[in-house]
Length: 195
Image (tube, rainbow, N blue to C red; front, top):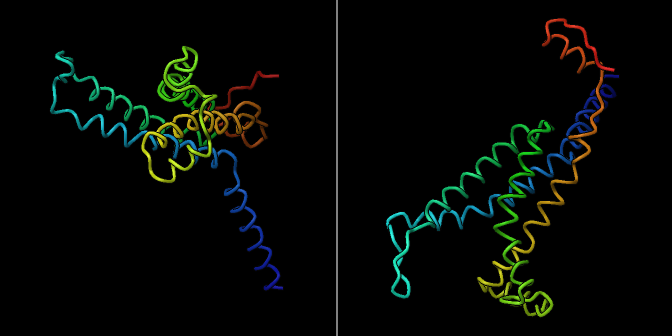
């Protein structure tokens, strides 16, 4: 009898653990975190130019805008990571909107938009002329331009899909009586007037 109870307890704990591991919101937060952390090396490289107030190129002297942009990029990454591991994991709507805003106004303009503008103007890289096997070969050889291109092309779509997968958990929640009781205690017993 005791062996059977112990086994049932183990099975219940195992099932709870597996549900947590296969939670779509957790998986989404992990993938989004990895994608956001991919911006950190470039941000740190830009920040490392802080000693140079000006850049000189072709006889012109321009201000160093790389350093502030690096700090801004690092700030967006940190805000995104904080939101992911606080509100997003709790399935709060505001956290989803913050992540969508970061994706739309930080990731898209910095990764995919320049490439799309170049293909539209027929300057620079034309997507129809990319030789995929050759690109893969260059990536495996460690060619930094090929790696940069692959990361820029893949980051935005991966983040968009990862953000849209758990959308049901954020916007179509089912409420239980436990949640209503919890809110009832928080509202000091005020009657609920929702229908």
